[in-house]
Image (cartoon, rainbow, N blue to C red; front, side, top):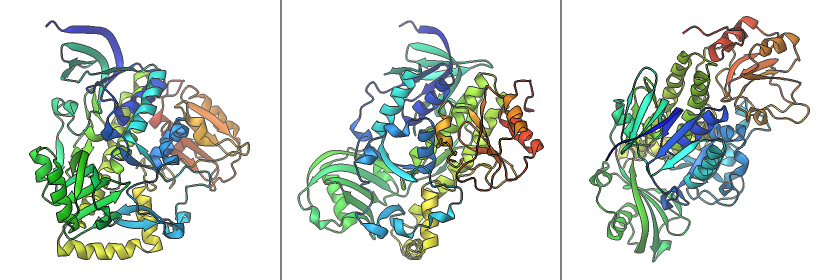
Length: 515
């Protein structure tokens, strides 16, 4: 069959229409870049993306990102569904998260230790499902002009100094850039020659919807046992960890009722009976990360760049963080509002965050293993997490409160997510970021700062006025992704401000960052 050549040249082609690929597309299209998404699945609807299988906990950086783009208000599931991974509870001892199955509780968390989270901050955690996020982001992407072609998997590509030609079967497409958001088995990563380094699994995980004849034989919530872990919640929803070195997952054998029942009985040490198996999937704690996120005009994001066990639900959040970070930088480069060297900061900022998350996942597996050493560590950590400082630390890590990029600034706020300052007129800074521009926020209504911002008028907004809580600040420079690039407590240091602005933006008058 003769190959079909599509003559349009897109700014960016994205492989994968999951939440990460769609969010990258939204960020690009928000500032008028042309985007094509190729997605191998013909139907975006899948039972494995819906509750309870597709349930995911959204962390603080993800919630802030959705809020800053005006998307948070459209999420509904968190308003009516409780997280099935958490034990029921009321009041101060309500479980709100866990580390390796060890719960931390709401009443033990001292949120006053999180200095930069103001009273008007978004939630620290919410639940959603993959299907809900995909539907929301696909609707936004299409409204912004993104072209989504379903049933077309990327089967090959080659790049030149100026463009990338992408094959999908007998069709080909051209783009200036290619972003692989095509999951753990990423074709883009494999064809692109990216090294995917890491560690092999300790267990096979199972997620299943079943009918149980005698559910009372299983304890509710998450249960770590001498053999593994099981969780029973939302009648018939099971999650099991069997420390078999990932053997069953790797075998690719069919998941039968008999097999699920055998594993559940062994892990739970009961004679529980499963009547019906509706649907099931397996997963492991294999932890791998690409050693670079860019090869020429090709980028990786999300599971294509890193995989790990879904303990604590940080995988989706890590991927959406990649999307927010890469999207605005790639758009600015395409529109010549930043030098191409800006793209190097994507790997520099996101790879270390990925390293932290993978190590966090490995640490959880290490203390869940069925051996005396792990049980001893588990006991010590349980005592630690049951303290106020311990619960606060673990909650801060799980929810992404401590996320900070090393941007080299002198102020301790630099590299942190911008607090959601509320101005005296009731406007919140997060609400002013929906256009995808940066912000120079001037609490002192300084004429010199206003003049400075005018030099970058097509890339940043100048916002002035007192805030109800200013944290002792006089002014801050906020990147399009909501990260603080510069901050001042007193009279602005214009040399430092200029340095930060040149690093992230191109001045209208031609001041450019050195490559």
